[in-house]
Image (cartoon, rainbow, N blue to C red; front, side, top):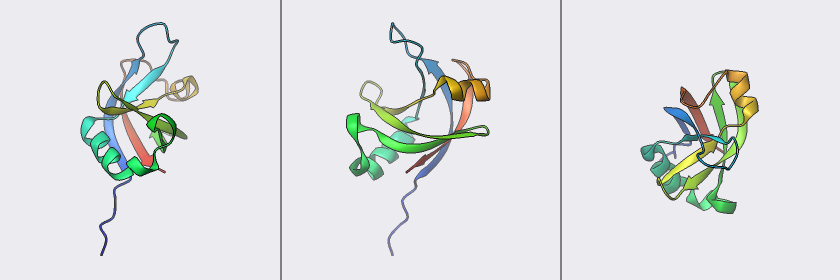
Length: 103
């Protein structure tokens, strides 16, 4: 019997603002342990720039988006749009609970 592959992850992480002149981009870094599991189990599903389709949920807000690998940290990054931040009242530096499902 094949072992089921975990495709849903829950964790706490901090929202951070991309440094520099790239605009007002906010991200959540997927923790290293979860990023390693995602890469190991879903690398074959990657699309452009190594992205993976996901459904993210913060508070009462769920949306479909993608996570992207960050070569510098070795983790995946989840961009958090202004609309999502407004709905949930989020700012850079906030610690949030995130539910992430690989689609």
